[in-house]
Length: 611
Image (tube, rainbow, N blue to C red; front, top):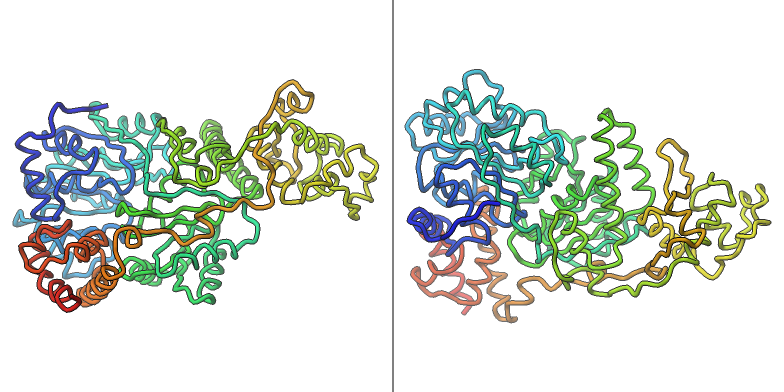
């Protein structure tokens, strides 16, 4: 991976100065300096950085330092709109060309192009098909194309988009400007594919660590459906959150149930008309404490740094998708929670979807491997973060910030439990689902058990000491370990794999977590300690609340998201430091020159009135 000898070149010093003056940030985040230095030197770059580590600053700052025009290719209109709004609030001449632009904004963008004052132009990849646009941007002085969510370029990426394949041809027509590509998720195969599709020669490649240490990770079995999610949300009142659901109907139902509990919850999915989706996204981004129940259609469109939790109410598509989606929480660096609820039926459905897709065999095998890795993560016997980051090639010590570190399981010799479970599968002919198998193990004389004479099997009743939920835990772990499986073209029956047969006949040991009735997690039941709880006294919290109220008032007047006025971290520091003049306020994190001039007096007045 690329590396530079010093982060104190004259170009970087200028970039630091611009960053402080425009954005109010005192210094680079980890990994930014090396990338910005390479970009400023005109090199093509491929950077893999965790969400929340400041990818956008790696192309925004060079655009301001060098001048000229930078084109940002971004996948969703709402994402572009929010980023342009934040830049304009900071005093940067930025614009977007999208299908939803009004005439005034479109004319302003073209004027900026023609007079050379526009620094950043955001555009969706499908717009690159417009005849003559590449040549026009080239004549306007296009110096760099920055590709956001670059994993969309790769057929091996988890969210491949054919429109991204136009980028290389577009760049050639525009005079081959510098190309920089950024993503939070790309394994080695995806990085090779991105490089081949975007760049004429190998780019400088930067792969930061994948860890997001402020995220608390938790996974649980889905037992009571919506009630588990409702309890989780109610433990976090007035906090913004995202709940990913498996279907449009599930989104609508979850939002309705949360509203019945006095939670401001909205649903978001492709079945809604564009106007409704746009309104609901604006509500989520611009207001505090909104909960969005969404399909993954909401994924890359979220540009809200203070999302305090992400819940998966069903199994995600893959480890990559899971990592990308939980990355929407805590982008401001403050503590945030994640919770995934899953069931074996989720895994079976996902396997059928992969098998029934029109993908070629190689793609299907890859998707199956990714799904298997996700199931193994769900039933990990040790630190979640070690398992998650290990998948991406990172090694860390136990993190102390996941459910398995909160309450470490003591593994047991699971051979007897596994043999009982697989004996039930074998003696019933490998033709039945879990409900029937667990009934046999527990000695329940159900109609189905009696009709098939399974009450006479040697396995009948050998597991009567365990509850249904405890046996479900055993079967989930056996599936995750590869000991049992379900035929993709079957009807829900379970079979024993070659590895399972070795365990069944005592040739291979297996260690399991003790089968528990219900594994509690801090993330599932307790109100989290967020930044305000950790950093502010009771008096300071009163001031912080007043500052938030003023921020929301100003944001609504301007029609902008609240975080574009000032981030939570900035308000927390104001509440702590209590600046009493503009000079002192200018030294607060996130207070750039333009924002100081525009909002300084208003926030100083709030601080003065509360003291």
